[in-house]
Length: 285
Ligand code: PAF
Image (cartoon, helix red, strand yellow):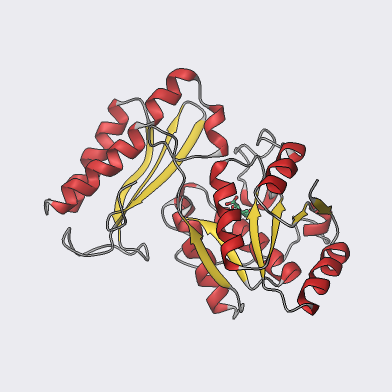
């Protein structure tokens, strides 16, 4: 069984012992319900540090009022077993009171202006304030040398890099590759909300991202590529929030011939909202 701690005092006791031995510490923040994507982040953490701490906390401040906070899958025993198998050293399983000692409502918030307001932020107001707020708290509690975040949440990774740099956290932010199902669907805890027919439709997201990449490589106008992707996804039964092409820093590109472009999609199938992205210059997934 993996060692599990629930309080900051217990957490710091373990960390202090490792630091005394000069060990490098990696943090893998998660909301639990772990799948192969998370386990690959733990593996990446192992390759970047001597000790790996994973946190499991379903963070209330990053969910909007009509979102899935209460039904978000919580599987702590299964998560603990999986983390032990993937070589994690310590599981931090805090309560809401531990993460937000003065209450979530009156919590001091971290806000990344601009970056937190576009794309995901425009469709989920306040979401990235909640993410940045909880991740900054985890950074302060753990003081890791390195922290691992998946590329699947592309904008989240940019938001975290931005505030970590701006607030001078001396932490290497290391991105982990998106892990996909055999048909290409990006792994996500939310995939289990999909009905069998929605699950078959869901693969259209990565198919469309690949088409967007091909069309950009042909030099077609980006606005047209985005519009067509949105139309194809709508025709396939999605309620589309966005299907766009951006620079790596999420600013608007000048044209299809720029290097480093990324396609990003967010779309709903029934009650399930899915996001995915494809970095056009990365090796083909
Ligand atoms: O990506 C997630 O699972 C969450 O947004 C994170 C980074 C653990 C913060 O709650």
